[in-house]
Amino acid sequence: MGNSGLEVAPLAFGGNVFGWTVDEPTSFRLLDAFVAAGFNLIDTADAYSRFAPGNRGGESETIIGKWLKQGGRRDKVIIATKVGLEMGPHRKGLSKAYILRAAEDSLRRLQTEYIDLYQSHRDDPDTPLDETLQVYAQLMEQGKVRAIGESNYSAERLSYALALSRRHELPRYACLQTEYNLYDRAENEETLEPVCIENGLGVHSYFSLASGLLTDKYRPAADVANKREATS
Image (tube, rainbow, N blue to C red; front, side, top):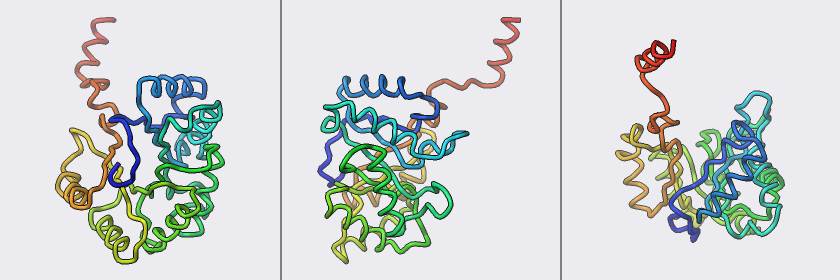
């Protein structure tokens, strides 16, 4: 993953389904099968799955933490989680105070002493980028974070963050997580890809199948109507 030193298999498991469309026992079975197949990157976020009715956030990390606690699994996987999305009143963003609090919450839910890849979930225009990088430096010095990444940054903000890292000898983002697939690709290829290549960043995508659109899961309305006529 870029210059992070983290070695991952070509496919990742997107943990936003845990505690939402996938319950805990099924999550355990999926994770067992994922690792058994030779894969190791599990991607989640503190905000998963706050968007589901009745959830408060942290459900995905909690399930992953329970799975890890079963023993003998922590050194087999790379855990990537994120910080920044709203988790409640006055609980969002990338300020020093909030990241320190959120990191401890994620470590507790994940039941681990360190996060392999800690990612800025979304740019925070209200917090100076150097403040965010400085708190990541603190977490890395404490051994609580191994590498950092970012998600949903524009090419301009990503370039600026990388420049700040060089100028002030701060940790640099090692990778970019971005929405990228055969349907949504133009912006990434035109603006973000050159920045990543120039700076040696790793890239891992989300919505790689366009939220199911590219799986042939969704059919045109005419097809649905024809099926109804055939079975009526």
